[in-house]
Length: 376
Image 1: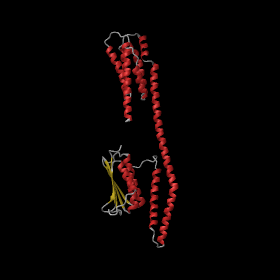
Image 2: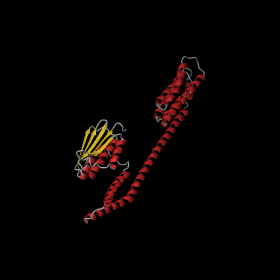
Image 3: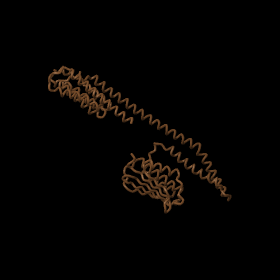
Image 4: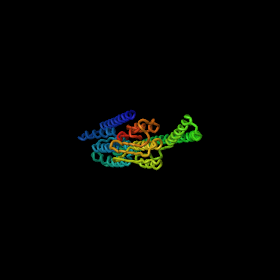
């Protein structure tokens, strides 16, 4: 809303300036000593057009520069001794927009044509024509208009650079703080949790070796230690993951499946169907994370021998399906963990759908559909 209001105010301001300049030119033309000629109406029209053209100086500065220059030459040619005020405004706008070379070339052309226009009017000899041209467009005022436009352009550019610098500084500080948190978590928690996990494993092992019944509380501590270690590692990886690393996407899925096959002895297969169009980066990252989390869960919890990853590239959507032959059944449906919740949040954020549930014939399936037309 603020941007729209600012645009409306700018357009209103441009029209006010344009009408004011046109009125000033007309008043100057009407107040001059006019000889009876049929070209008076053309001169008044050129004066008006040169002023009103300034209303478009933000949207089309080069076109306004050309119109203002031609109008100035035109009304000089029909005998109107009126300063080229509109052209000065056009020079300012064109230089501010960054068209310095075009502005210099146009100004040289206008300065050369003005004496010829004064001579063409038939009201002046050569000396008077050059004098009138110098009065219509003073070189000092022309340079001042260009300098003002360039100064404002440089100021706006420095303001933009300062804004970008502030954003980069804030992003860098956030990255530094994230890494600091990761180091603090690593130093303060990882060692203690590892000690708890190792001590619990040793206690369980000793109890079983003696033939004693392992207390439920000790088993709970052992499992909690394992889970805490896994979650802490995942958290630290996320905190350390900065923007300097290239984002993972759809092209990295084959490497991910191959790595799962080599590391865990899992017979994993990948099938990609359809034409791979320009997939948005956000969709590609989500596909990679879904496959990564699914293969990780299969390796840790499913006790599966095979897994299949199928990606269907459609014109308007991208479908993913990961199946395994693990021990999950509809009767023993696992409680959704952090990984599945994270997958669902990623998919929902992109306007997609996710299904994650045991299969009727055994094993687990993860199915997601991500629309391509809702992501820019």
